Structures are given as C-alpha cells and as structure tokens.
Length: 429
Image 1: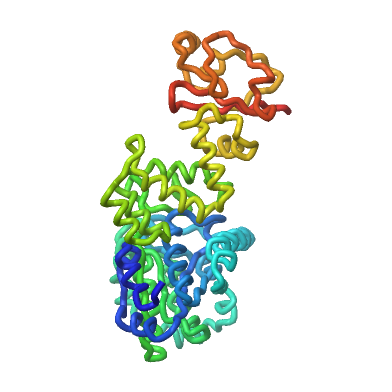
Image 2 (image 1 turned 90 degrees about the horizontal axis):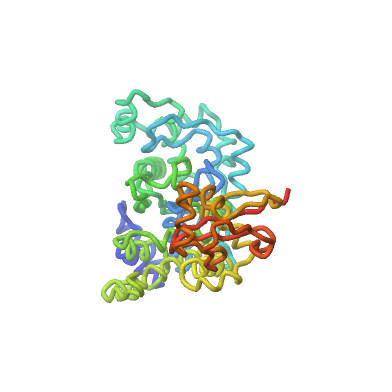
C-alpha cells in the first residue's frame, strides 16, 4: 500500500471515525515510516469481534512498513477503564491477569506476527514502566497537566457522576495512566500515533495533550467505530452473545456461521472493516450484489476471508466442511472429522449426552432433544418422514439406535426438517 494514501484508504473504508492532528500525521507518513500503538487491557482470556477491526487497521499500517507497538495494559487493567461502563469494575486477580496476558499475546501474535508479515510487532506490558514510577513524582510531574474541571466534563464521567453508581478515584485516575502510556512510548519508542475504539477518544486526547504540554510536541490519534450487536450494544468481554477470537470460546464453525447469517445491511461495511480485500473489489461486489440461492455471494467472501484470518486454513476448511454437510451436501456427513463434531458439540448446534449402554428409541430422542413436544408429537413427525439420522431418513418411531448410528463411536446427528438439528453425544463412561 502507498504510504501517502493509507489515511485516505482507512477513511474510505470507514475504519477511521474521529481523528486529531490529521495533517501532521499525514505529513509525517509522507516523509517516513512512523511508529504507532494500540492498547489492550487483559480483562479476559480472549479478544473478541469488536477488537478485530483494530487488528485489521494495525495490519494495514504493518503492511505499509510502519512499526506496530502493542501495549498490554496489565497496570491499567488493575484499575479498570470506566469509559461507557455503567457498573463498577471488579478488580482482577493478579494471577488471572497473568494468564489473560499470555492468551491475548498469543492471539495478537497469530494475527500480526512474523508468519503473516515480515514487519514484526513489538508487544510491551505497561506494568514494566508503571512499577518503576514514584507516586509523588507521578502526581507532581504528570498529575499537574490534568484539570479536574476538564476531566469531570467528559461525557462518560458525567454519566457516572449523575448515576447512582458514581465513580471511584481509582477509575477516575485511569485517564492519567493511559495518557502516560502515550507519553512514555513517544519518549522511548518515538510513537506519534495512538489508535483505539471510539470509546477511547477522551483517553487518546488526554495522551496527546500530555505530550504537548510536557514536550511541546504534536502527535496524532484516531478512533475506530465500535462493532455493535444486533441489540445495539457493543461487543464486550463480560456481555452475552460475544463472538470470541479464541476457538475454544467461539468455534471456527460458529464464527463462520455468524458472518454467513449477518443482516444483509452489514455485509459490505464488514468487508471494509474486517478484511484486506481491495476497496474497488468491495465496491464492485456491492454494486452488482450477485446472489446464490438468494444469499449475496459477498457474504461467503466475508465469512471466508475473516475466518481464514482469525482461525487459519484448517479452521476455515473445518467450518466450510461442517456447513456443507449440514446445509448443502448432506450426503457428505461421513467427511466430518472428530474435531468437527467437537466443534458442533461445543457451540455449533444443540446437543444432549446419553449413556452409551442405554437402549433408547427415536421418539424418546426427539423429546429429549426438544425436537418434539411429546411422544405423540414425535410419532407424527417421524411418520411424516421429517427425521433424519446422520442425514438418512428414518420413519420408524420405535427405532432403537445401534452402533452403526454412532459416528466415531460417539456422535449421532439428528435433523428435523431442513435446519433443526441436535447432536447426540454417546457417553462411554
């Protein structure tokens, strides 16, 4: 990518929401490579879909030859960012935070590591500099640059102050710590740009102002749009319905299916935010809006590129194999692997456990699997030829499951109609 056009490219893709000191940033990019940073607080053992747009943005800079610095906020996670939080942050256990850091570093390294691009990243932990700071000196030389009046006038601080919850001094001090991160990185790593989600705008501004008042230097920052769930709330590490980047928390199949099933209005926006596909290609796809079986082909392109980026080729192939076996080439169920079935049992479709030595018939299974309301209902459904066992129709209500129905001796796939599934997991214990 041409360095001169990277900011325009990110704006055109909708990746940049708000930006400060844009002209200064553009001039520096025009002259040479820059160093930029993004921070991630280890408040969970995995990043989620909301973080992916940040990682893709960093990838654009990385591919253009710029130096990427990731700050893992061990120190700031002990404080907790109050931005747009309407409950008190629970202080994290130090041992748990260490575990979270290890997991998150592995995820970021996988997405931005040297295997994907020769321009490797630097990952730092802000506790490494905060543990060396003298409290009196910090308050004397850093605290003096922050106006209480300005801080309490920030939107999210006002919200908290006017709520029954209020805000603690611990949370109130978060902005100072993140501002100091930027100051430290500017001094020792020549970082001139910070990026973050739109909820980080005030914290980014705090760092920019601190650098200006301390060193009389102008640096830049920009925010990216938050990725919202269908109910309008942002993806978070504590909410429900989160799409995680860790395959043990959200399987590659569920990740792929989430993208395949998004509302059509999000397709082209997500292609711009989550993939490296050329913008002209995306605009062409949007203009043509070609569909296969009434599904825009761009959905499959989005799911394929994004799943490949997050879960690699094996994760993508597995997600596609399961999807094809369940919804397209139903005679290909024998191609599913043990790992594929483990994904399905994890979060792909509803599942039930049944003792392997238990004699159970098809009617009973349907009721247990919530595919029928009663034995009478199950009997009718079965006789209407609506039930498949491992994608083979079965119309015998009292059919007893045998060993040949147990794929890999552990799994049986039950389907009612076209899209209602249940996975039987035969417990050998």
